Length: 306
Image 1 (cartoon, one colour):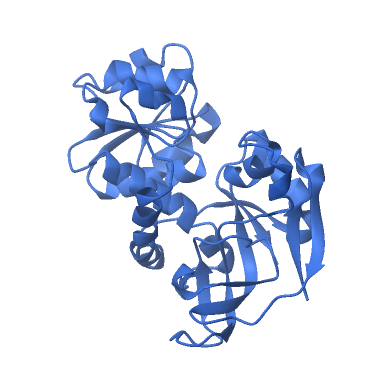
Image 2: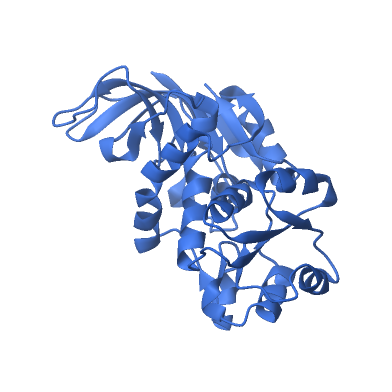
């Protein structure tokens, strides 16, 4: 038996329950991982909030898309070994003490990266790589990042700067020093944003990445970037009507993100990609963790420890 988190109804964090359930043996091509940490992401609470649908047949909902831990059993035809420290992504149900998952969803965890950092790395990192690749960010580009202090935003800033781009990032003023540390030029969002960006980049903006959604991010991006093929959003699905790339993370997008995992782990191992942990919560305090991420004021990743 193992403990795991299930959403037993649609609503707020109060519908989350800690349950005991059996964990089976891994089958062909599978491993069982004793989890040490699980990354918390906005999509986790959206799954049970009702904003993505409220089909009663989908209940209870297993939560958690990424984590880290130690392999404790392997199925037939699996080359990984028991005792290997691993990162788990993509997966379903990482809010748990143990999980059976396809072996292709796990990769060895770099020795110098903590379980907490590893659990919060791959979802935001893979999303960031996808956004940068989709808009062909390269050396000499000026890139506007909406929501640069968030989890995906911090990864985008680091990766874009590494490619030789100049990054202008929107954030509240209290997060400007952080963005400077990561290599971006911060700017306050809100009324007059387009003019403030023009003042910083009088020669123009080549790429805009919307990581927050909302009308401001879309309109400012359209105003500043001439080539709509170099504007992308991960949060505003209606933007597709404006010719903007909507990166939903499904189908081919999911395969592209999965392919980014080795690169991200290598960069993290080298210290070239940081994962800042905003706070950690025990798995049993998952409701509090979700209340914190819903408030939207955290800087860095929230991680559950197991």
